[in-house]
Image (tube, rainbow, N blue to C red):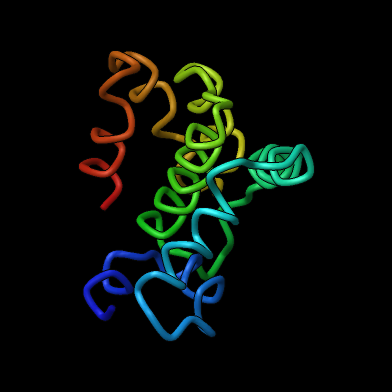
Length: 121
C-alpha cells in the first residue's frame, strides 16, 4: 500500500487518505478519475484558464501545476493542444519570466515544457 501511495501526487493523496488497503486506494482513484464527469472536466478547464504564477511560487512549482492540469485533462479524454497549453503558461507567468517568451516561442512545441524547465529552473 505504501508503494502505491508513494507514486501519488500531493494533490491526489487527500482523495485516498481514508483508504486502508491497496484495493480501496485503487477503487477510490478509479472512481474519482477513470470516468470523469462533465463537472470535473469543466473544473479542470477553469483551473487551467485561471492558473497564475503566484509571487511565492517557484517556476518549477508553477510548471508542475500546469502540467498536472494538462495531464488530468488528457486522462479525462480532453487533450489540449500543445499550442493552447503553451499559451496558458505564457499568459500566467510572472512578469519576471515574461521576457523569456520570445525565446521560448522559437522552440519546437513538443520540446517547450522540457526546455522551459531547463531555462527557468
